[in-house]
Length: 571
Image (tube, rainbow, N blue to C red; front, top):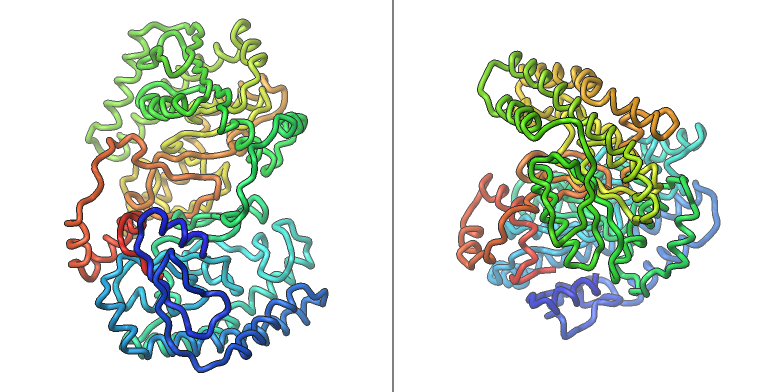
């Protein structure tokens, strides 16, 4: 945490660090003001506890002995932490200072719940910075999927590919997590209730955390769904190394068609050669999709990347630009036919009509649009002049909108990683391909206009739409499955095709839609095309502090990402 605090200080934040008088490493610094409070234990007792706690982690013992030692040492450390927290909350002079200082946000490690309690007391947003709870509490709090048959529990040393006996052991360890939490944190719940002068459920307090900064990386552990306000920052304390050499790039390309998830992500990072710029092949979707993507290409060009855009000769908006090289291919339709089909499709989307009739018309237009896109894709893949050029150009990555699967087919053909840039796919195949949980009782389906809080009737409607998604996907993408299978010379489904996407850039924002679990390689970029405005004025701070109750909580959710602006920061 200290490295983060120093960087925040360099950016102009005013930082106050609360620390017990007896501590291990919390020393004075020019980067922050330190405020201390008395605690009822000695330096020797503190050293003894942490020495035992760290030593057993490196002992080679059985799982049972490890669990027993972990429990004993955890209880010793937890008791010290409890005395620490209790001493702080009972220090009326310190609490009064915190009230009068009008801090804008609280930065804390939630393994010690004291910061969480203080954030609730001071009614300010909190940013969590930690490695994880021994009892996987963070996933229960954030409602992230955490199935015992797939997600290995703490201290088991398992991977997400477990044998039957390992799954049984994982289940047993999981059954101990709730009793472990109660044993470790019940006392904090009692002092929180006393301090806040109301009955407190500790997991509910944790749920008010605005952002969770997780000090690990799914690439080196295992991929799993997380909520959008959980951010992986593994390696944040690693020393900055030199740029990857060309030898490393050649080694990665030698992997051929091995689509190891880790290897692909490393390839995305290394092959683009951020320092000197890389070669990017762009296969866009026409219409408003292209207008969103074009701004990104302009920015990438400014950073030194060499960009080639492949587009049909007949299109709506895709013109030439100094930001990229345009390569075109012929298609068997006219400009008038293209304009007419897209106009009919957009009129259906915005036309007010009964729900059943609206669905029927959307399906009809989906058929026509799919046929148009299929024709476009076929003429690209079998263009005898363009495809050899793409293969010889040695592109580092493909940047594409998966609404038109042609880009991903070419990415597999060229054996390069792909980056998806999309709003969403109507039949939910994007979530299915990425293995994201997508229950119809909670996640509203596209075109339903429902929120994630649905009435029984809305849930029934949502379920009906969900059950029709495979039918819609079959209408839109069945031809593309046949095309991909023939072109790649192996059986291919849309789910498998999209599952090879390295990074998903989604033009949505959970704040304005609804929170739902996503995989770590899915990045929310909603608002990327919004016009850049001036920084928020100090008037916002007055309005922010003045709101209470439900309105305040909404503001916390929206402004939490802004809380690290030029404001005072409390740790």
